[in-house]
Length: 430
Length: 171
Image 1 (cartoon, rainbow over the protein chains, first blue to last red):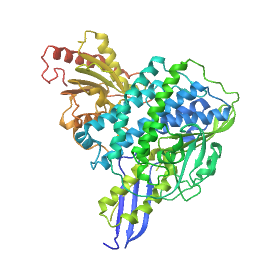
Image 2 (spheres, rainbow over the protein chains, first blue to last red):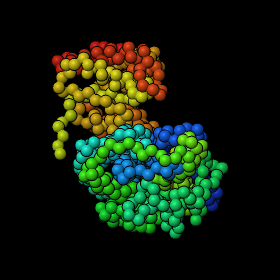
Image 3 (cartoon, chains in turn red, blue):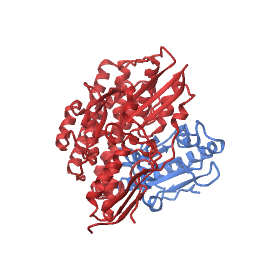
Image 4 (cartoon, one colour):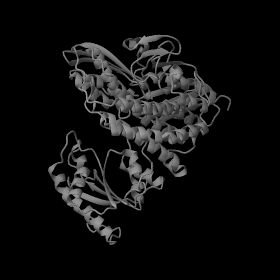
């Protein structure tokens, strides 16, 4: 079929969070339409935050997402703390990092094992995978449980943290809890190694499209909280200048805004972090990257999942070190740092599982008068669509089911959280 | 680090006590524990919102008695004991459900993993209100002792080797 005509209409794509459609229209070998439609209702969280006391913001905004609840709470707290001049203690910073690793692990394990591995292993979903490879699924469940228990010990719940508060914590883990977590993290190394082994064997599509990769960066650590924005195209921005990077705009076929920086699109998430911050990875994570044949700068978006596996190694190893440090220094109950002022503006940013998350608040006399949240999936949508436009001409000769699968796998590789971005995927053929 | 084998019988409460009648499982656990006299081979556990990780709680068990609120179109406080069989496990996973998996998906996954206990019974209680705030509605709170008694009776019958899979209090 030299000049194929077909229409792909996936309505909605499965194994992603939320609802979105892939619509591709090819006529006589010409790509006429290639859209990633996001069709979810806007969430209006920014409007909900307005008029609320500053102390409620992290609890309200953590409800944006059941997967990245710790990330939203942390970005919210950092925005509030910067607005009100609060400097958290070293103990608070360490506990937040440990909590954050728990959430990254939980999300990455779910995505890599339950959402991506079934495609790569040629089974339809996790249920047939459980039948054909129960050890693989049980391993994922064990790792997820540890990640959830880690979060619960630090922030009071597996998701939607209750102990995180402006200036510190309202609850602290005991030394014996930290010791148990540390021991379980050490014991999970076997499962982590098996995860690397599994993804060494999985064959993901070969597809390259260079783009701009953006992530938070610190010189002395693999950055998940605070830092500055750094692009692989060059350029650094303080978090407060996030609007200069995101440049949000609207498209007709999406209820989520798109973003662009120095090119028509950019990518955030595990692969972007890997490309920007490879030097700061834990040595064992670098070993895993070598074993997985992942080197910066990697321009295959399907390998975002492989970068997540590298981050699983990093987060487990860094969590062990954080736990040991906290055990050595001892966690002591400290009242949260009180704000020296009750009015101001602040922007907080974190690297949540799917990429860079921004919260920006204006607070007046302790009440939130303005809020802006920019979600990672929203920043990736235009990049996914441009990937699709680049991919389709290379696979036009294939059967429609294979084209659909390739497009679905591409979208899934980004691990999109469409409800949060208020966007999703539907591929239809005609 | 070796763990002792899990107790053969698990009584598992699922639900969020901060969502009104969704906390009925935990209330039944309190009732059951207060009755005392549970055999050693029975473990009582609050699973909260375990999701897919419910599979891990079921691993290595002979039977599981699960208490949860369930929308069944009944009058609030009415309850049923449901034996988990092929009909409850049938069907495909709902699209996108892995980000918000519930009991059905966890049981489906446990069955696929061959980790489903020989016998799984769900004690399902019709809620009146599932919304912000703790505490049960009056009709659901009235059902708690009856469900607790039914589970106790089932455990004791099982201990005496009399339970044949037909719950004497099955409604």
